[in-house]
Length: 126
Image (cartoon, rainbow, N blue to C red; front, side):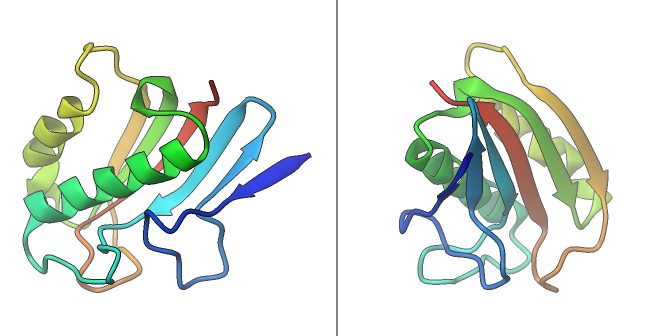
C-alpha cells in the first residue's frame, strides 16, 4: 500500500504527478523543480534555482516524515554542464556529516525552458 505525499510547503506540480509517494519504509520524490511557492523562478540564476530546489526537496521530505540524512539515492538533472561545480558545492551543504547518498547527475533538456536544475530522490522514512 502506498501513500501520496502532498504539502503546501513546496510548489505543487502542474503535471499529473504526486510530489512524492511513500511505499513501505521508502519515499520516492518526483522531479523537484526550482519554482518558489508563488511559482516564481530565478531565471538564469543557477545558484538561486539550486537552493530553491533543495528547499523544495527538504519540504517534501519533511512532509513524508524524513529528511536529507535519510536520502539513499538522488538524481540531479542539469540544463547546463557548466553548472556542475556550483551544483556540487551547494549539494554538499545539505549533507553536513559528509555522508552522501548514491547519486546520478547528468545534463539534459528540462521540461520548462527556464529550469536549470531538477532533482528526484529516494529516502528512507524514519
